[in-house]
Image (spheres, helix red, strand yellow):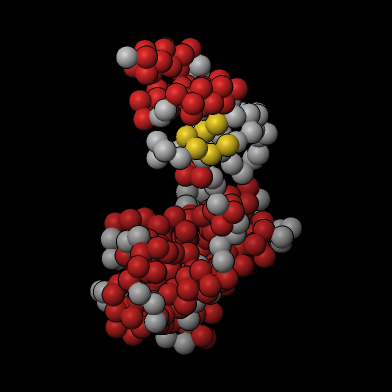
Length: 273
């Protein structure tokens, strides 16, 4: 009877004590019926002082220091009772840059996929790509959750050379010469790379849109500069220039490509007064 009363009073006390204090009194209430009088007196004193914490086993006590405020740390989260919870500790790995092996695996997947798609077409399964790269499917999906994600990243990689040309053109003071730089040298891929870029753009509507956005983002700045200089015909858009560039790069020989570029530039330029 006395133990039951003490347990009831402990539960009432728990309602008044937020955080870890409440937990101590709840555990005390559950433990009271299992202990003798001598142990009960000692336990009551210790729980009241805040120096005892009972774990899940009602017969085991662990003596702790009284509750102290936990200093805030940027890399940790705390429960509502102020104590750090291991389930919410942010691991250092989640805040660091990707490990070298992760970067290496991602790069290998992209290189293998580029070669495999160029040789066998973009319909090749992702399992085949992972197998050729020497990694498991889990590793593949960790880097590229879907095949579309892989295709989109390959398009970005293939556009790397064109981006370098666009950056070079941005540093050219003359607007028309910057435009000429991109039109003549913007398709920095070889024939195999151009075929792969086209094939990847046809794999999905999302890929087609990404390919178009890549081209326009590189061409539009020099189109605006050339138009602003008054030397590009009005009405010519970045989309028009992108189509012309693809036509020129489909020429059979470098000489034919050079002639195509010169003819296009002559037609796009506003005649001198």
